[in-house]
Image 1 (cartoon, one colour):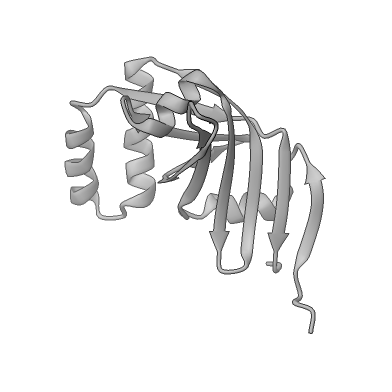
Image 2 (cartoon, one colour):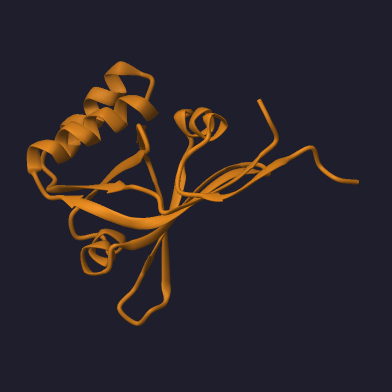
Length: 146
């Protein structure tokens, strides 16, 4: 039996269905390359900004260090059998003000309780943050429909 899934061919742009899927506050898994060439994966928060995926991390973690050295990555968001897979290179923004603004925005996206979000944002204030923007070179969609 074939599942009623629409599998779009690979392209460099997001379809309307992919945008709707990515606009929900789901978690993403990013894959970067370690120095020895082995893959490293991490679960992250993200937001969609036009055709760009924006995400951010505390400086000093392995996956951001990997991206500082090699900007290639893959990015997947899944919900059961529905998923969007992206591949490309990131742009890096080390501006601390941008980093704090992005993590505050992401916290409010993923934490609906305002007091809890404020507490998390206050905790992030002491961290040095780096922001990444992924403009996909390849987009693969596997969605069951709207």
